Amino acid sequence: MAKPPPGTILWHDLTVNDASGMRDFYAAVVGWEPSAVDMGDYEDFTLRPKGGEGVAAICNARGGSADMPKSWLCYVVVASLQDSLATVNALGGDVIVQPQRLGKGKFAVIKDPQGGVIALYQV
Image 1 (cartoon, helix red, strand yellow):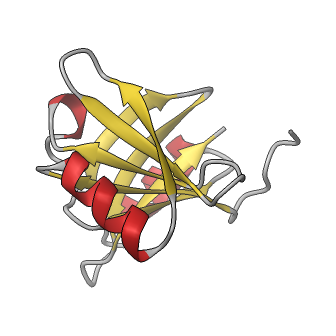
Image 2: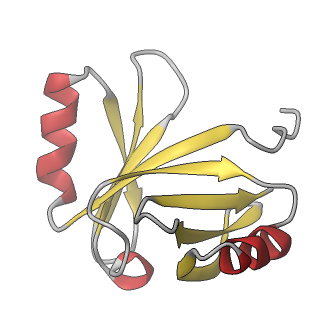
């Protein structure tokens, strides 16, 4: 797969207290097919359209995800996470989840000056 260009919405996560319950809710409402992701002593879930690739995840609010917002969070590709976070701070936003490794890249969660929350992801 080619590296997605900056500005691409790459993924969506929902972090909640009961991922299994929300897995069933969205499977019924949207038709997504869930796949369990072993997290050790619990499971999170990847979601995909029937026969398709994963497009989202439902995660339990535990471990590194404990402080994630309890709403759908989209991940947007940026060219440089470090540069983007510096710009967030310069323009009056806040970094609410510090940079962390995720897959082949790294991400951080920011809040814009009006309270909107989004994840920035550097591949």
